[in-house]
Length: 449
Image (cartoon, rainbow, N blue to C red; front, side, top):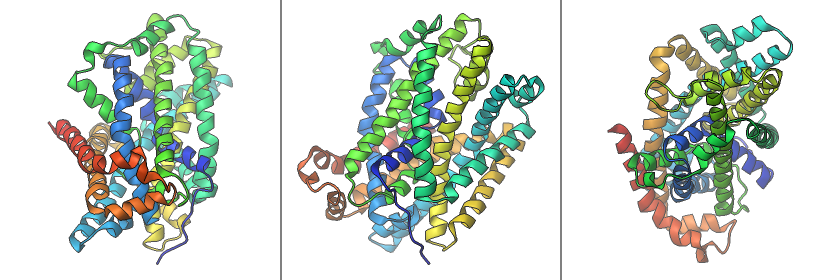
C-alpha cells in the first residue's frame, strides 16, 4: 500500500532542508578542532578540495537515485537492481541505513539535549535562578533523559507535519537564523583579547603537514560525514525534489553551504578557545591535544562565558541556541529516513509512523543514558566510523555499477537538458564508478586498522 508523497515547494526550501541535514553539531565543534590539530589552513585547504572530489560526487549519487525512484532508500535501491540477488542487497543496504541513522539519532539526541539544557540554563541565569541553572548544567541521568525527551518532542512535532509544512517550513526558518547567530558571535568573539592568536592558528597554513596521511584521512572523513552521506538522508530529500530541478547545480550549492558553516564555525571556535586560554581556562587535554567534542561545548566554552560577566550570559544563550538549531535541522532528516519507509511501503499513517519511530529511538537513547559509560562511545564508533563509510561505498556501487548509464543520464537531463555536454557528465559517471568506491574503501580499511 502506498501513499501520496510530499515534495519541496521551492529550491530555497530544499537547500535549507538539505543544508540543515548536513549542518550538525559535528560541523561546529568537530571541524574547527580538526583544523587546529592538523595544520590549520593546510587542513582547511585539503578539506575544501576533498569536499568536492569525494563528498560532492557521493552526494550527487544519493540525490539522483532518490529523485529517480521517488521512494525511500529500500525501494529506491531495490528498484535499480537488475537481478533478484542485487535487489536483496539493495534492500539490505536500505534497511541497514535505517538502522544506522536511528542509532545515530539515539546518541545525537542526548548531545542535543545537553545543548537545550545549557540554553535554558542561560535563561535561568538571566532570571537569576541560580539553583535551576546549576541543575541544568550538571551532568546527570535525570537531566539528560528530560532534555533528550524534549528534543525528541521538537523533532517529532516538525516531522509529523510532513515535507512542506514541517521539514521545509522549519528548515527555511531555522537555517537563516543559524547563519545570523553564527556571524554575530564571530564578530563579537573577534573583538576579544586573544582572539587573533586563535585566528592565526586556524588560517595560517603549515604546508609541511599537507602530505601527512593523518591530515588527509581526517579531512576526508570530515568532508564525507559532514554531508550526512551513506544513511539515506540525502536520498530521501532527493526524492522530494521536483523533476525540473538542476541536480548538479543544487548539489553543488548544498556542498558549498555545508562547507561555509564549517568554515565559519572555525572562525568562531578557534578564536574563542584562544580567548579562553588567555583567561586561564585549560584548552588542551592531558595528552596535549586540543579539547574537542562534547567536552569543548560543555566545559571550555561555558567557563569562558562565565568569565564575561552579564554579557557572557547573552553570548551563552546565543551560542547554545545556535547549537540547538544545528542539532534540530539534522535530527528531522534522520527521523524522516525510517518514517518514509513505513509510510510508503507499509501504509502506516505519517503521524503514527513518526510517533512510533520517535518513541523507539527515544527508548534507545534512554538505554544509552542509563548505561552511558558502556554504550555511548561504542554506538558512536559503530555508526559513524564503521557503518556509514560501508553504506556510502554501496551507494556509490549502485550509482556507478548497477544503474544503467542511459537511464542515469535521462534522469539528470530532466532538469538539465544540456548536462551531457558539460563537465559534470564527462567526469562524474566514471568518478562515482571507480574513484569514490576506492577512496571510501581506503578510508574504511584505515579506520578498521
